[in-house]
Length: 351
Ligand SMILES: NC(=O)c1ccc[n+]([C@@H]2O[C@H](COP(=O)([O-])OP(=O)(O)OC[C@H]3O[C@@H](n4cnc5c(N)ncnc54)[C@H](O)[C@@H]3O)[C@@H](O)[C@H]2O)c1
Image 1 (spheres, rainbow, N blue to C red):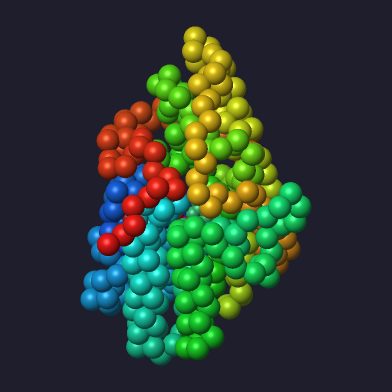
Image 2 (cartoon, rainbow, N blue to C red):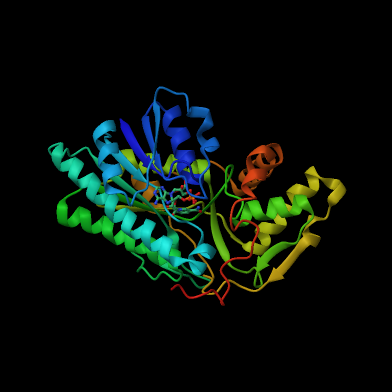
């Protein structure tokens, strides 16, 4: 099977690329190489005869048509997106462009290619989305695949819109689509503007570790390699037209999470313990969702998938990876917007 993977130079996409190539799939990685991309994430497979790279924007229909014609994929896994909630507060326009218009453009390019191929039933368009489309939970309850959509940030609203487009292209045109909605990921190659890498890298540098508000927001964390495995499971075993929630059964408050990371660093860098002394509460993110929690029963019972890595194991692996890979993260800290507080309530209005 040849898979066209969009966003394969990003955090999750690169984990899918590495896993798919290691499992013998042919992979075409299509990525625009935005600020969030890093081709080193796929350096391990870059010389494989099973790997090809196309630099293209998913809003560029001509480039997409060329990629489909030249590479003739059997499936698409769509991960390309603008993904940082804080950036979506400061500049929602790129989220509308990539996540909505880009998904529409990719759907149309995929549909044109699929029609030209004689509408093969085995073709798949797998759309990768987030649990943030469901909004926020109180202290009780879980997101199921039937939970109503109620996105609260420009990011999650743009992803919700893309989910609806994908569903409609399945219902209206018969394109064989499948969608998955996942909780927060963490692990190696996580871009250093996201919570877990920020905590590790600020703690190592002896800088304040920022916690939004009281830090009581609850997230359900999934190790990125488990997510990549879930995605290949959904692609190959998922039922057309169905969606699958993916989660780690690892609910924790942001504050607890940060304390766990600090404790791991205390063991590895005892000279600078206790790292938790660096925790600093800062102004909360506007519209900050209180709690996300996934009911992943469907993917478990119907497709036989469950995560392999516990939160304790995954955090230890992640901390060790950042300690060993300064050459990867150090240059990324110089990229635009990294290390700067983004997404506050006084965000400028776009013109
Ligand atoms: N990170 C998470 O915790 C999480 C959880 C659930 C779902 N998701 C979803 O998974 C997907 C991947 O997330 P991630 O964290 O790896 O994101 P990321 O920001 O690390 O990577 C996104 C990739 O998409 C590429 N890209 C952006 N705009 C593009 C465009 N217009 N054309 C082509 N390529 C473009 C970037 O260059 C980058 O390589 C996203 O769709 C996201 O919504 C993420």
